[in-house]
Image (cartoon, rainbow, N blue to C red):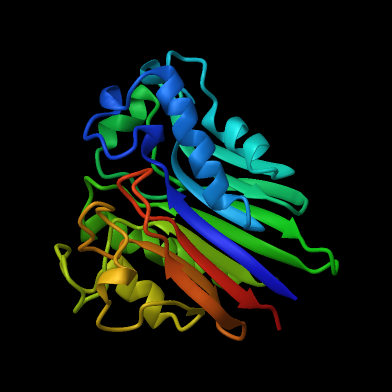
Length: 261
């Protein structure tokens, strides 16, 4: 069986605007979500970062996870909020196949005081049952942009430990705000979070070395970083892996097609 997986930081639906408040009118944001839905519709499973459930810049009425689920014709959804007080946004996993259960994976926080105002950057895990009856584990990740190796590295170690404990195949994807040592844009002290994940030898991934311009995922208008990743089980064959050239967000969506073994 082949499986199409995607990861997309949709930047709260603001497009390439620098501020969430500068993403246009509610109608413009709605039209942008329709275009994002067209991008993700062919996928079986997609991980979404920076998705709003209710936020002031979209007049508190735009649940982007629900909108994309419906527009792109996904049947199942799991979500995790980063912020539960001021605005509600965070992670979503959309799936064409049944989501059996989901849970939040607690990660270290860079600004400890953020938790006192209801803000956390954690990971989201969901168990998906495929048509064959096989179950797989999906881990949605968004490591904090404001952070550094002192938090991102132990976060990666927690995620790897979690993956190792699973008895079913694991896919991990999202915006890691991080590159491996030797890649353009390295700013974390090695070993980076991506080094930890790659050195676990649990996953297939692309690019392996020397990323091309087409493989860069950020910024969508002038890509120079590979920070959006899809990690698939080591024994699965990667049929296709690409970043899609679109400016519906400041990140490019990344898509992988894999052959399940």
